Length: 264
Image (cartoon, rainbow, N blue to C red; front, side):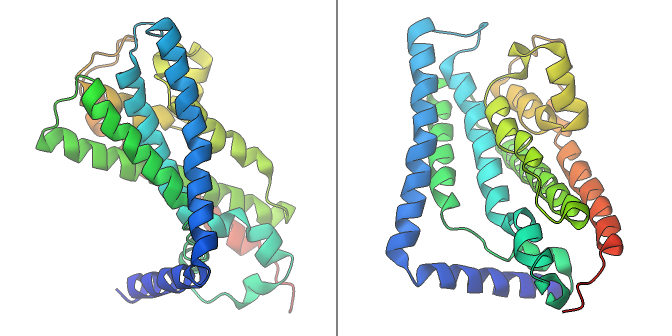
């Protein structure tokens, strides 16, 4: 409980610091809303022109889009410390002065209010999907939606943790992680069934994005998987997101043991 209280105190301090300049915080949030909104317009234009993509309608794709962007908005807000670990902590030596637990300190380092714009836009798309797609919201499907969002946050946070872990060896934060964060968001906003087999396997068994978004999305829609996966899979597959985060923190502990202090 002490660590939990410390985390929320650090988050509150981060938010208060950003709210010292409310106009700047608001403009950053609005810019996030507008930038991601352009993607929504592009998807709408695609379906307005063709009607469907391999049998998928705009309401169904809106569900996947809203789920994935909600996951990423929350994870990105919490993962800033790992993203800048190399440049802001390792190179300057300030990592030596971070109190334990280190991961908790980094998660609360800068909880970015600007990501509220992406989150609100994703929730708006989810609201649209609830109207445009054949979704019957029951306590079970609502619980599944919350479960898969939580697991998706764990997945994307795990990718950021791995990015930070690599900085113990490279000092610089490698941009290759963006292939799986921003690239994963772009891929996850469409049904996995539209992709090639090798890409589906990558996003199922290596970075299990399909497990936290696609299969639960099918269960929420009440739609059978065109690729033949059993209907029950969507109810348990989100566990893969939490497993990925656990493995990421195992790698993190290896990186911390490898770290050689700057002596500052």
